[in-house]
Image (cartoon, rainbow, N blue to C red; front, side, top):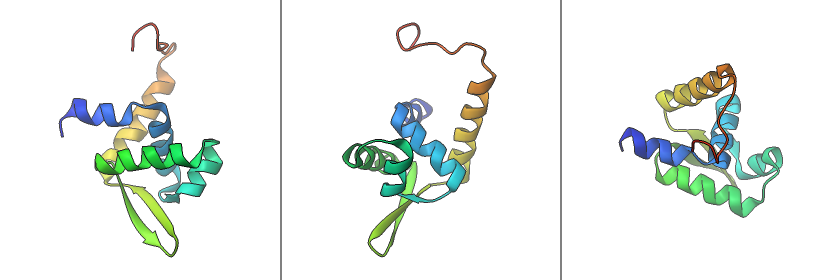
Length: 99
């Protein structure tokens, strides 16, 4: 995977929110994401599947639950850095202006 491919995988708002939650809590199940994001379970599951296919998150079974984590330290650091950098930019672009 190259850098552009990685950024495409995480550039969706819901996917990035999922990664920010994992950054904070390290490991969560689908129901945790649904509750904390206020989004429907099928949508959350779809985004987790995409993140897993890209190799950004990994999962493990815990009884009836599937627990998700960020797959490696470098990706975790990237998410943290992007979150911190975005807070330091005085005016972020809106979707219709630059993205």
